[in-house]
Amino acid sequence: MTSGTGDTDVRPESLGQWRDYGESTLPVPLAAALAAFAEHGYHGTSVREIAARANLSVPGLYHHYPSKQSLLQGLLERTMTDLLHRSEVAIAEAGDRPVDQFDAVVESLLRFHMYRREQAFVGSTEIRSLDDGYKPTYIGHRDRQQHMVDEIVFAGVEAGDFATPYPKDAARAVATMCVGVSTWFKLDGELGADELIARNLELARALVGYRADGAV
Image (spheres, rainbow, N blue to C red):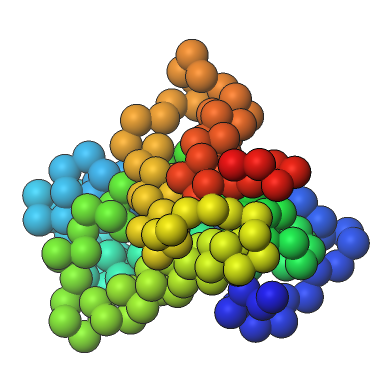
């Protein structure tokens, strides 16, 4: 079974790196835009405020990004590139069994939406603010991520691992559940990241009707 992501080269020294989240490596202007958009929304943020957060003059900011819209697009492009790459590597690393690929992509989605909460939040809430020229590209990235989950669930049903009669709906419900953690999870909250992942993997398997040893 293929994940539809093409050949992803997974070297032994890189195994598990999709789980690693250090400090964000966003360029300073994009980091400033992210903080402002997350706090005030795209339309509630001025270019002057972003420049101030970035310790730049407005002309200095425009030297890097010529408009507020270009900042939003640059931010969302980096967000989706990171998310898609992590998902592809997680799936490739998991091997050929649909259930292992399913666990990997669910964990990858959960970790991204926990550790890159602000980026995920802005990406979900500011689609309406994208110019028509870029919006189809961004939606295409989101569709590509969903398609990864869809293919794995359909393969799991075909293999007899998953019993859901509604694989398309189940796959979308799983992705929606993963995305939703960005709206409430806190790294310093009562529920730790690993515990949340374990609970949500159990819920995700239930949504697709996972068969353990042939039993639903």
